Length: 410
Image (cartoon, rainbow, N blue to C red):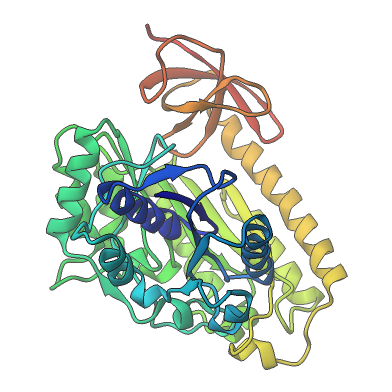
């Protein structure tokens, strides 16, 4: 029987799709391209924004137009309110039921991955769920309460991935900074992971600012394997907006964290998620965010326009911002993000750094591409047998979003 998969959204979704794929393989299903004819289509959806929700709906419709006979299994963060898009023969699986449903469906006890299809770096799930209920966010309603995975399961999975050739793993979850399993926190988990022989890099997924505790920062600053790269779920640089969002920190506290990181690791890349156009974000609040970002050593920004999600507190706030202004502010912040990125990357011109080269080429230039430990994406001239290898690279030039380098070792 043929089965096809499509994943929208976050690294956690991508990890969970990989696990479901491997369950299907173990049950002797034939995995085919999503654009091919299949008996079953599994769509792992995202609903974090209205745009992602729309993509999910369109994907379901596209499959149904292509075939009336195939079964569609929809899982992920797709809202139950959209179940009317499915036919009677299709299946909706909520996130909380995802693992148990597919375990039963494929008749398997599999609970960890052995590989990560079409990736050089493997994602590893350490926890899921969120107890925070920020005013703009639908994730707690779709992912449920926080739960952390046993360290032994995580360690065994990473060992298998390393045995299968993976050199870097990316720690992922909804709130990895809130990992807690019988007293083990994120720092103690990282220490266990670092002891895995053959593993060369550990990269952290997103962290909330208050989760970046001194214990964690000090450990990473002295670690031989954990990458000097933090991606912060910042969302705003305005104290007023952060309070309305239900975020548990102030811009001042974040600035102090970033300054400490910079003192401990002067090569560290610090990226941030920013939401613009949140209700009550006037010109003053937007300027506060812009100026906050501008004065701190951010390496890049991921900018999102606020997306109203039903059943969240922010959806009933007055002072909703119009889409035209959201787009204008988003463009301004993206331009600032590029400026900060260029400033960060220019520090490394004519310096040698270690790059993990991807197995896929850059689509635009057809050059090899890889990432430094501090998350600089480097384009390199073609060379033989370099995929999934760590090479010493000299950074040569910066052009906009692109960084170019040359391999300096054999």
